[in-house]
Amino acid sequence: MSLARRLLLGSTPNGSPRRYRLLVPPLLFLTSFAAYALGVFAHAGGVVFLAFDAAVLGVLVTAGVAYRGAGVALAWLSVYGALLGSNADHYLLGLSGRPLGERVAALLGLDGLVFVGVEALALGTLAWVAGALARLAVDEVRDRQRDASAE
Image 1 (spheres, helix red, strand yellow):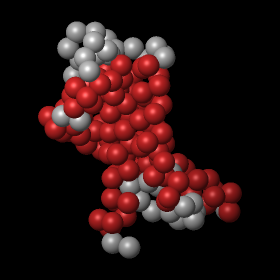
Image 2 (spheres, helix red, strand yellow):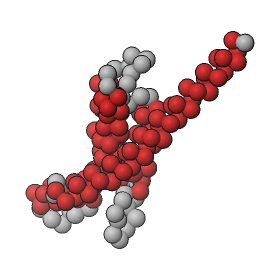
Image 3 (cartoon, one colour):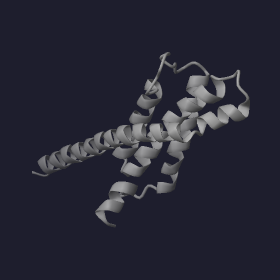
């Protein structure tokens, strides 16, 4: 497998199936949406450029899946799912005075989707790097311990 493909899609040296990783973005979307809808997460109010709670959820889970060997593409999609869940709550439940079609159109507006995409690219990349570096550090410590116990 080429380096670019491994970075984008990840590697599975322990044989864990990749198809289960594809559940992460929609689950983060549903979790974020439900957390905002139930009041577990809260919008800061005013003009919010980044949904903090959704971003933290996405970044933490993304760092975890990166630690497990997932690629950066899944990191981007995972953070995107979490942030889109926040937007879905805002547009679908927060604008209740407007017709449903108008609320769905606002959620699916290209400018909003692209803005969330840019946030997801930045945050997903940072989370993926953190998770991948944590994995390398843990592997290095394990190798040193194994070498020390073999002596």
